[in-house]
Length: 109
Image (cartoon, rainbow, N blue to C red; front, side, top):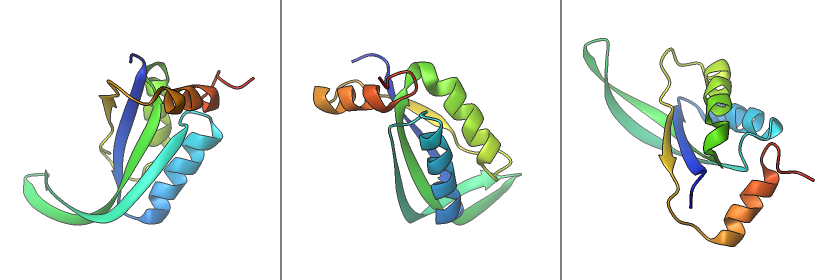
């Protein structure tokens, strides 16, 4: 399976995660965004260890839409340096992937 990815980002509130999901869906840059949380993140920031409650967004899209997905997340996201990483989908149920294809930008008839 080539061409499908899951983009991951985190936010500090559920409302921020929902806003990112809404904008991505409105622009047809994601077929589905799952929001999980709250969860605890521990990380380094400006030389200090930090701990924060965050919400996780799992964004289903295609690799050719990644630049637009990243740009949109950066536009909407309140963090100075948001986590935005893409993971390849190496296998998946063909029916689900066909559904994704039909719902993404350029896939509607």
